[in-house]
Length: 225
Image (tube, rainbow, N blue to C red; front, side, top):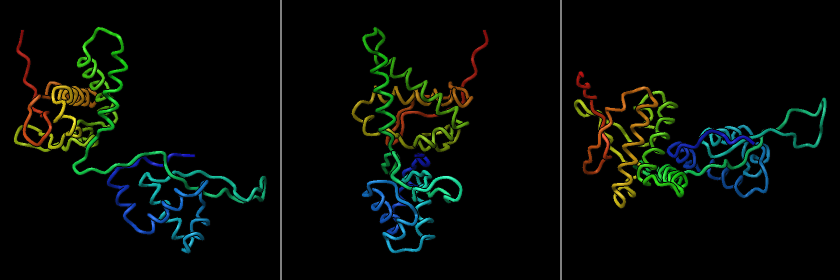
């Protein structure tokens, strides 16, 4: 079974808003096994082509996964082409506006706790190190710092000579545990800059009301020795 594409909340929500696609999702969720296009069409009383179109849109949205298998029990030459099978993708989709990434925060903090173990390094330092390493991977995969920030939900916006991060993906946690989460944010974005091949020195801690505590500013030139 292939796990389809990674579900993006907005795409998944748009796909699930269609009544027919919701009916297909319910059908497949309640099925004891994968469902074929023919089976879905028959169950809902719709043309096969219509079922195929909407099933594939659900795959593109990351809500369904597919595989191929022969369902008639026949094998060898003349057995016909394998049927395309659909089942629920093994992903969780949550939609929040503005975007929140509590899953990422939880993953980073859990990894930091496991890494710290019985060591003597302060946990906050371990959180920063874990966040920076994860940010570096995100930045390298995105190819640019702005793309990495947008993909993670920070909503970068140009503001004169700075880039302000309008949204904090960890807002609720930041209001309760400001020191830990803001430190994690700075380290995460610094890692993104480094991974994307941009100067990490432009990442600044600049807390403001109703936005992230991080800003990007032109890096100051180092004084000559």
